[in-house]
Length: 72
Image (cartoon, rainbow, N blue to C red; front, side, top):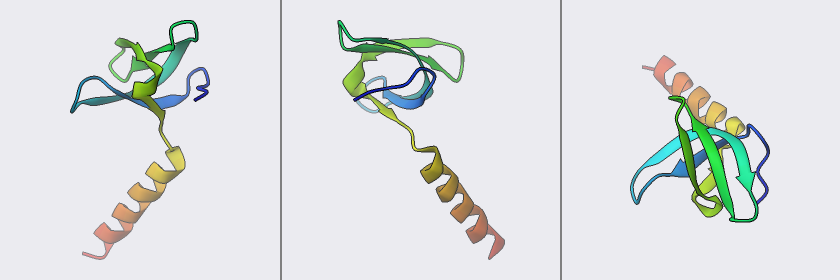
């Protein structure tokens, strides 16, 4: 997987917890990535625990929720 600098990603912090942040470093020698989360903390972990967020899908999902709310 190729990640771009400052790309928004979701990362797994343990078995049931996830965070969202921006890629600040990719370390290909160790297959690790550093992510700056929404609270300003840096998470470092294996690249296979990180996946890019799909901004378009999130916007579409939120838009659909708003439309449903308007029907109430």
